[in-house]
View 1 (cartoon, rainbow, N blue to C red):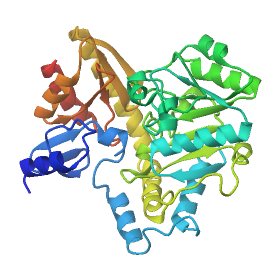
View 2 (cartoon, rainbow, N blue to C red; view 1 turned 135 degrees about the vertical axis):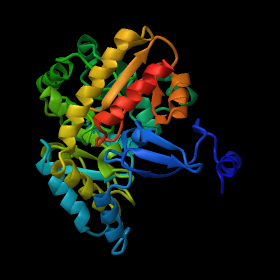
View 3 (cartoon, rainbow, N blue to C red; view 1 turned 30 degrees about the vertical axis):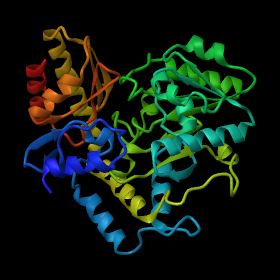
View 4 (cartoon, one colour; view 1 turned 180 degrees about the vertical axis):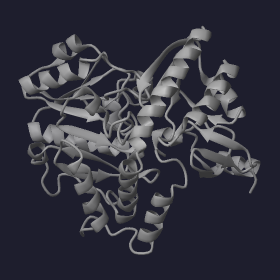
Length: 388
């Protein structure tokens, strides 16, 4: 099928929930992807921060192929070696003790909310405005963006208190005897790549310890090296009670989960939560390969070095372009806030051979594969300079 045929068939059969770019991607290699018409693009979006090792990574592909020849799915009625192997590797690298596997960021957040409520026996969770935690009814209720909530307001679960992000006094004022947890993104992704003040997360952590409240960090987008460390909370020197994760975890395959302390893990007993597909052998084989690649090929170091370079070049561009109001982010999670809507610049960049994204209306979001080079960044900067 050609591009137009594929688009026409989708328009006829798919439920209309996405605003698509008018290209059909066919294959990729490294940071480059190619559409059905043979056009080449540098992927500076990475499937919404998912393809952290780029496309067609040899180690990940071989791990998937090898596991697919053995077992693809067995359910959680039985043990499986790739899931156990990944759990041990990951937990040895973190400050937490136990894992639950899921399939998406929304499911990870849903499970984290459930275990926090059950463990504490309380009924309220504090979240922040401009956050994004998922599209299930429970995670929509946690999300601090009315535009996503309004169509379902009559059906949203109760118990979530939304307060301004980066406002520690608002957190303190919202705490009651029924507060089970505070749930926050270390850096808000979909909400505009919003970076908190240096002490904000530290102060939340201290409040949680003082009041006996759980701290849930939504690291769905910031995890797995995106900000230069395995998880972004390491940048702020805090220890959460629960971390949620997804996106880059499997390098492109759908795997997610949440980590908890040994104590919080007591909140769930057999039957309290479950999943049919979560932690299957195929996706865990991929996740093992991703984790090995991150540490054995200096991917995190590259993220820091190239991320700093990218941010510096964007700041230089900001000095030339009045349209750029702000440049912010850590590692290779960078937002360029414009003083005008950003959608047209996404289109213009695509026409020049670069895939980027606009979030929160006027923030160009750059979340490329963590293997991207300075040479690639130079090309992005030249194109962005031209379209602005």
